[in-house]
Length: 137
Image (cartoon, rainbow, N blue to C red):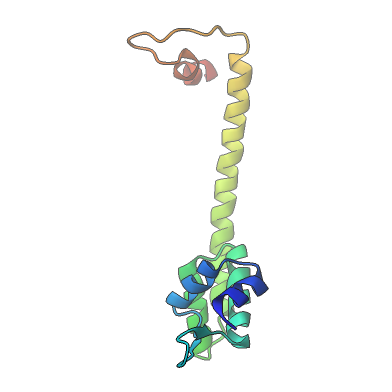
């Protein structure tokens, strides 16, 4: 299968296939007569794995580590568990930060209701923002 066929089969772009080929995660055979790269079922399965890993939040480099473990004949599952736990912890932290930001935004909207629009001065750009932390206290 050629790049475009692989891309069409997996509903991804040809550039995605080429990217993972350049990274060394796919190992197509170069056809001697045409010079085109030919991908086999193993490449398709590996690309499906990569797509699934990306959907779970694994980075490209982490996927390389996981593939490396598998290519050494070692189970990558302990590494996968460690990485996903790390990602979940980071995601939970970012989620909590977003919830706090959401509450600050809601507070700003409520705080700014009925406040007048003001022209900037030499020392003030937008009084709503500049006074927000002071008004919050």
